[in-house]
Image (cartoon, rainbow, N blue to C red):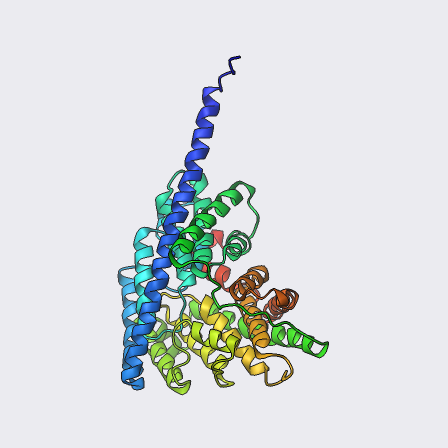
Length: 430
């Protein structure tokens, strides 16, 4: 029995859909490879800076300000729109319809500059992370690899951003949730399967190169007793308010500065970056070199209890991250924010002495991070995936919601979407 032939038009449609899927998967593989290489480069730069400090701790007073100034100079002259986290640029690129403007935010040139200058920032001790930059890099790679049609470009940018988060942290679920909650702000049925396929492809590369791992290791301690549950609202409120305050200051700093001195500094971004670098170096000396870089080691030490930083670590890390963000140099706030939250949990553990320190650290991380990004589902999923602590699922979820609500009292919009307006024409600010 001869089967009826498929219409030519339908064959073309199926072929077109296959090409689109193949493009998304191929792009995901490339994003995964770039993310893994970026992570290795970032670790190497932090190790080199540690070697500089081993020679003399006071070397940071020269290396850090000069590194900040050089990074700001290169970002403005050679790689415009590469400054800051990179997530606002990716959000703005999805909203734009003008191809020239979109290309100015996501391109291979910007991706190269983002990797290079983020590595430079870590080499000079900036309190930055590579995860936000990986989002812009992932969006840029997908946009360049899969320049199919104007209808697919927004989906490509979304998928690249989600794959960047997933590959950077080895958190595939967090990558998908981040794409839906933060990048898309909605569930787009047409691109959902393509985004998931891209995340899987990026994750496969990460697993093949570095294996399966939990970013912060594994913790299994839970909350026990009614008194211990008071730690949830305590961390939620304090962490959320601190995160909202951080976001509000960064958003305000991105706009015009008032006053004679403020206006003068705003017109001299290289000098401003150098002064911010000097501030980071001074905080580094005050903290005994604990506030430099991503803060990864400090969080791991807090979770396993091997090295407990002083009570003021969270506040000093917040200050260093704030100065790094205001400076305008390329670098993200994901990892430093988690370190700040861990420090807040460490500080509040003095009040909740009966609650295990790792529990306070996890609650502080999710509350502060939720307060900064105002994306509670992303914050909850990413912290659970990073720590593999399923005993704290409900407390972490509640702390994320409380942190989000507390942050709204201080800052009425998430930091990434507020900053994305700086890259959009006024008619698209809504």
